[in-house]
Image 1: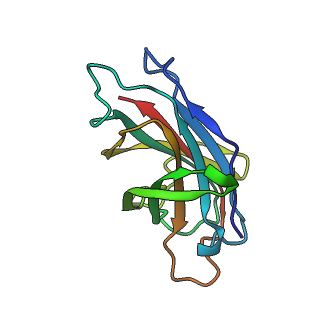
Image 2 (image 1 turned 60 degrees about the vertical axis):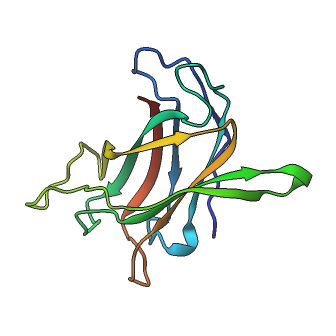
Length: 171
């Protein structure tokens, strides 16, 4: 089962760093987020290149994540595959133009003692953070999609996750 998100355009109104250029959260099956439940985050990059940021270099973005989980989520991390692809919808079908990035990420959601890193809201725990060692550069305007695929060998998937979100902010 593939899960889709609404199209959100990256914008250039982020001058003070307080508002992200892209921020979308997608619900995942709490009974188990499995490989078949790949999350798709479509992005439309509309920012043109400038003299300071030529088209070939691209504007640098920092990738953030939001994870909502129940107290029953038993792992300290959420390992997943991050894939960014440039796409084209010419002819009414989505075609992959090229792979921009493929990387394994495993954001921590618990400390070394097993305590959740984020605040609790009733029976759910929210955690937001940035991936510090990852900068994404979109070197041309157009359509892109970010995919998150859970990296689990457990047939039941990651039980206890409720939602996963992505944030892109210009650096």
